Image 1 (tube, one colour):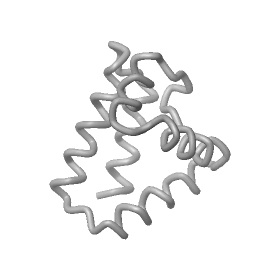
Image 2 (cartoon, helix red, strand yellow):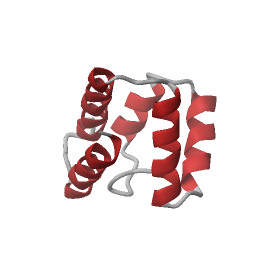
Image 3 (spheres, rainbow, N blue to C red):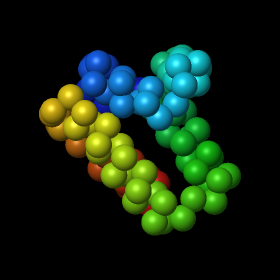
Length: 90
């Protein structure tokens, strides 16, 4: 799931600096076949299962924004995804 439908090399580098390539490929393949609703449900279930605090969710949103900015742009689709995620996950 990429907000602007483009996986910039800088964004991919940022992701793979945090997780190994096998994990990235597994998650990418899984979310690639999901529709938006299913993807959001998976995110919600995971966050609820991990008992993530509001403070930790805020940190997560900051990390997502850093990822979006990795290519030097903060596209409208990325902003809209961020707003939508905040509404759903808070």
